[in-house]
Amino acid sequence: MVARLVARGVCHTYPGGVRALDGVDVELAAGEVLVVIGPNGSGKSTLLRCLAGLLHASAGTITLDGAPVASLPARQRARAMAVVPQYLPALPDLKVVDFVLGGRYAHARRFAFGRSEDLALARAALGRADAAQWAERTMNELSGGQRQRVLFARALAQDARLVLFDEPTSSLDPEHQLAAFESIASLSRGQGASLVVTHDLNLASQFATRILLLADGKAVATGSVSDILRPSVLEPVYGRCLHFGRIESGGASRPFVLPWSGGPVQ
Amino acid sequence: MVLSVTVGPTSVGLPDLARGVASMLGLDSGGVPLERSRQAIVELRVWRALTAGGVGASLALAGALLQGLFRNPLAAPSLLGLTSGASLGATVAILLVGGYAPNLVMEVRGEMATWLIPVFGFAGALGTALLVTLLAAPGGRIATATLLLVGIAVNLCVSGVVVALQSIVLADWEVSRAILAWSYGWLDDRKGLHALTAWAGLAVAALTLPFVSRELDLFRGGEEDASALGVNAPRVRALCLVASALATACAVSVAGQIAFVGLIVPHLVRLCGGSLFARVLPLSIPAGALFLVGADTLQRALLKGSAFPPGVLMSLVGGPFFLVLILRQRRSAMTW
Image (cartoon, rainbow over all chains, first blue to last red; front, side):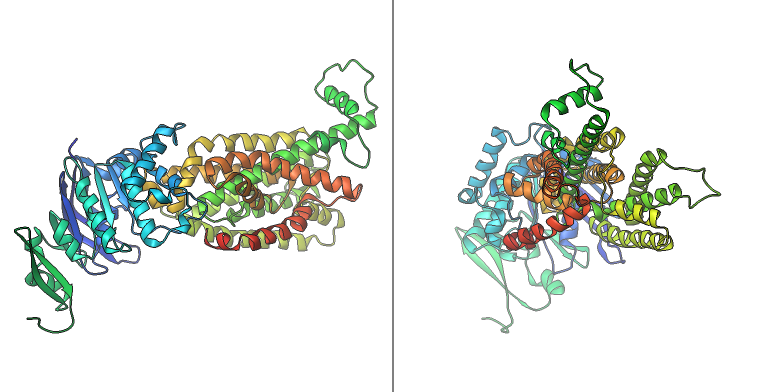
C-alpha cells in the first residue's frame, strides 16, 4: 500500500502555555524525503512527535492513509510508521541485538516475539546499518554515533513504510552521515517515504525531495531544495549568518549553505 | 519449604511432617495420628512456610514490575504508598481490636483479629495506591515521574498518621506491642487464610505477565519510544500498577511490613539470569519465595527460640547486602 501522511492545521501547546506548533500543514507521500529544517525551538521535534502519534495535537488533523493517527492501535501504527529518536539513555545490560529485536515487536504475535526469524531480521538490519559488529555488545558500551546507527538498524527491523527521523546524523562522522542519508533515500524509493528533522542544510540539499522550513511553530516555507536554500527564504529566519553557494557535480548544480561570520565572500 | 517446616526449637522429622500434612488435608495416613501438640506445631510451621513463600514471591514480583515500570533499580513496593497504607489499615484494625472505638464497633477480639487486621491492611494498601494514582493523574493521564513523587509524598504523610496513632496509645502496652510487631513483619501464628491470601494475590498479579514482560523491556528507552515500537503504554502502565498493588497489598496484609525483598530479589535474579524482563519477572516469583522462606528458616535454625521478626531480619541482612551489591556494581547501578 502506498503511504500517505497528511497533517492539516496542527497546533500544539505544552503545559505552561508554550505554543510549539501553530497551524502547520504537512503532506508526505510515497517516494519522498521531506526534510524539516528550522532554528532551535522552531517546533521541528514537536511536529515529528505529533505526526508519529506520540504527542496529541491540541488542534488540527493528522491522518495516515486516511485514518486519524491518534485513533490507530499502537501496533498497527508502528507497522506503518517507525520513529528514530535523536537520543536514548545508556541502557546497560541490554545487548544491541536484543535492542534491535524491539523493532520486530509490532509484527510479532503475542507469545511469539523473539523467534528465530525475528532475530534473523534484527541481525540483517544491523548489517544494513553497518552495525553488525556490535550485536553482542551492551548498549552502554557504544559511543553516541554507534548508538545512532543501532537506532537506525532498529527502524530498519521495524520494516515500516514511513520512517520519521529526529536529527539522525547529529553524532555521526561525515562518512556515516552520507551513509545514513543514502539509506534514508533508498528507504524512500518505491512505496516508502521519510521525514527527516535536521540542522544540516547541506545534507538536505543533497538528499531532500522537498524541504519544510519552520520558525516559531509556523510553516514559513515549503518547496524544492532550490526554492528553500536561498538567502531570501533563509535569512529572515536564521539571520545574516550564512554563506550561500552552488556546487556543480555530474552536470547538476546544487546549493550549499555554510554558517559564516567572516563577512562577504568573493 | 519442607526444610522450613522441619527446622525449629522442636525438630519435626519427615515422617511426622507427612502424617501432619496428611491430617491437615483430611487424608488417612494409615498410621497413628500425631499427638495434638505435635500436630499443632506442624500446622503452624506449614502455614508459616506457605505464607512466607507467598509473601516473598509477591513482594519480589511487585518490586520487579515497579523497577521495570519506573526504569529505576531502586523502585520498590513502598513507592506507591502500599506498605505505609497497609500499616495504617492494620494499625486502625489493631486499635479496634484493642477496644479503642467503643461507640463505633462491637467488641472485636480474639478470632476476629485473624481476619480483621489483614482486611484492614489490604484496604489501607489499595486505598493508598488509589489515592496516589488519582493525585498523580488529575487529567486521566499518569505521568510516571509525577507518580513517583506523589507516591513518596503520600508515603510520608501516611507514615506520619501511623506514628501519630502509635503515639496516642503509647501507654497501652498490649496495643502498642501489637502495632510494633506488625510494623516489623509477622509470620507467627499464620493460618490457612493468610497463606491463601498471599498466594491468591500473587496468582492474579502473575496473570499480567504475558502482557507486560516483553513490553517492559521496550520501556527501557522511555514510554514514548516503546509507544513508537507499538506498545500500548497506558495499558502496560495500568497493568503493572494494578498487579504490583494487588500482590503487595495481599502480602503486607498477612505478614506486615517486610522491607528489601522487593528491592533485592529482582537484583539477584538479574545477576543470575540476565537483565531481560521477560526472564526477570517470572524468575522473581520462585526466587522471592525461596529468599524469604530460606532466610526465615536459616535464622530459626541458627537462633532457635529467639528468632527476629522477618522485617527486622530483612533490614539487618538486606541493608548491608544491598550496599555491597551497589558498591560492586556501582557503575551500572548509577546509570541504569
